[in-house]
Image 1 (tube, rainbow, N blue to C red):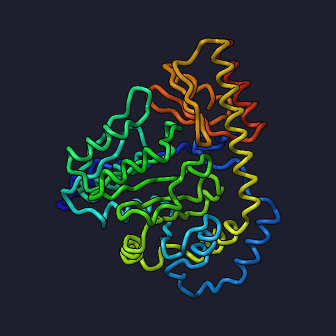
Image 2 (tube, helix red, strand yellow; image 1 turned 180 degrees about the vertical axis):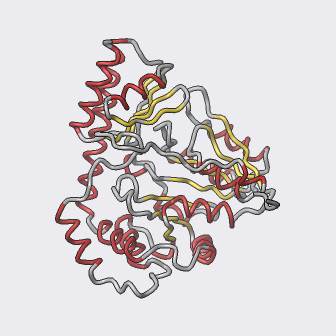
Length: 352
């Protein structure tokens, strides 16, 4: 055979999430709440009215309107993607050219670097401080030293659970006026430092939001990019014409209109996360077992531990899925019952 894959593709490995059945899933930062029967019935009624022989609305006007009303953002600032991943791919593939440099940070969401490399964009990685925090002045200097055309990071951060306050992020944006700052606020529903209502104040700010976390629609691929009209029009022009199917648009529009339901779910998730953090720190005080438990402003808790591999395997043996990284484990906050079971198994591990 003479055909060969190019060097970008030859060593790529497909994304490999945890598969199989586990009684408790605390590995993917999803919402612990499935939709109730009333909301499912509402969706079923809406879907029954779809003309399945017609193409979807290219601008996803229904979910755009619902998102605009939920977050009090003008519709003209919003683009809709098939998950935030598609939007990251579009932005990194179209707003930068081969040979440009985009800065990401470590540790952060791995797909930022993945998509940039696919589009032959250079990636320069800023290393966070030892405590996993970002020093705004050092990050600004790093971007300037590398001639960055773009900067992308999550705030609050996945996987660290830490966040930068508004003033620090504003300083980064205004200090890098020639750099597109892509701010992924996937977890900002669990914190209070969003710049969403300031997005039109800057020429170089683009904010990403997702339906997979606080909104609880990980099964329905839908994400949003929010920016000034110039950037928004460019994204709308660059995306595929029918990138969001009508079923997904219908479901998202229905659920985003349920403001009280979403607020209640978010509040419970924040409460459960805080309780999980307190339970883990109490166990740490008892057993002196972790190097560090990070204070979260997300829906998960990050733990630094040399036992990451053994704890991960022990949890799977007890039908609990969590996430591991080298030197760390990450636990998504579940229901009160799920969190209690996780703590029971974790106590069992350290009492062996």
